[in-house]
Length: 555
Image (tube, rainbow, N blue to C red):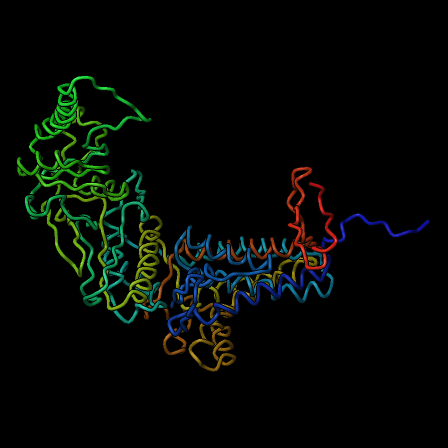
């Protein structure tokens, strides 16, 4: 009667119950440990070799995890966290992982005491709501137009990064760039599209101090006929096209049979006239610079250079959009639909410069550019890549401030305040949820604790002192000075964090911890369904033994 029943195939592996919980928690802790040392101003760098053999040296949590190849499913979802954080707010990628790892770590004890995961999750979600409430309470608003405050904020956010040694440089670049491309949406809202309208050009050579934000755009192109066309034009009139200035080729293969020789000449003439026509339509508007995304034939080039117009061809679409935003031109699809309003007159200078061995075209000194290019110079490629990553973070931070001008203290002070408040609240919570709630409160201390570890001070003493200071709630701004490890007032040290970065960090970390705790079964080895009859056919390999017993076919 009781013969074993096989439900799952033999090839499937199934783990369930507490084993899975412990596995997931272990995996998450490992991921958190990988980047734990990259938190704070005294952070270590990680060197990664990617598949192509290139080297990446960075301490940006997201950049590190992006390169890791992880086998464990729970670890994979941890890595997703830092990516989400990077896309949403651009900063706090390391703290998210450290916090989530810690949340899972404290949950482990409850799972061993056979608490139900749902109970733990309920307590965590409650803790999250209260934590956000605390954030709202201690956040202070700032004036976006007060440059010094914003600079201090951006600096403290990228103070943990490699470029902090160059002082205000990166912070300045970031604030300049984001203020240029900010667009008012009305109702006091500002939208900043970093990805579309800020281009970062890395040019090896020179010093880092030569980096600057251009009031306009630059791109890696030269004029079509360098000898004949001007390379420097003041107050240029710019026309942007995205159609080819060459004779249309047939869509498919066209054969034309010509009987008389004169017809051939007519054909050639038609092509030339077609191009001349387009050029005349464009030249009517007296442009100084014509830029097209597509091809530009020799003939068109000749007409332009004769009229003293510089032309640039085959420009990337994204670059073209940026030029349009910078000088106020409209990209035109058909030359015969050009209007005066499509001509961009906002630029103050067009010139082609040679930097290193490449020619770069600059459209700069624009009146009210809504797009810009950040030019980064530096000794080596690796260094430039790292600077670019830091700049991305800095720009995200300044974007967040423009969108939501509220600050919370940095240096672990926010986490400690949240932790202390939650500990006091946990006394009022009834029933079984009280303990996981308190554990969540303790888990928040992971961030200041890690900061203290990375400074190399006595962790236990520092943490106890800080907890004491926060427990009686005298000053919510007491935290760790990440450089010295001393306990300091964050308001005086000017160590801030953006409110929405913190809020996002807490939300992402706790929600992820809940999700991983809810997993109680991992079934691995699921095959993709194959079409019937399309089973994997193994190629048969003949060995020497088979060769003898082959039947010889009759002729």
